[in-house]
Image (cartoon, rainbow, N blue to C red; front, side, top):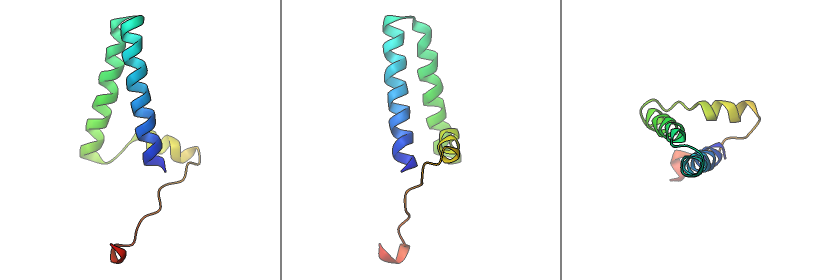
Length: 70
């Protein structure tokens, strides 16, 4: 469940920052780059700050499948 929320939040923030860069100021593209850098960092370290935030807010994790069921 948290993974779904992380994807939704990241996607929404990217779209919002792109719209802000078009209609407000180009410097909002730095926020888009920050989100992209965090996604890249997660691919290497498997650590995500948003996951920790959602966990502290009580959002439940996805149930894991047993390996013998696959």
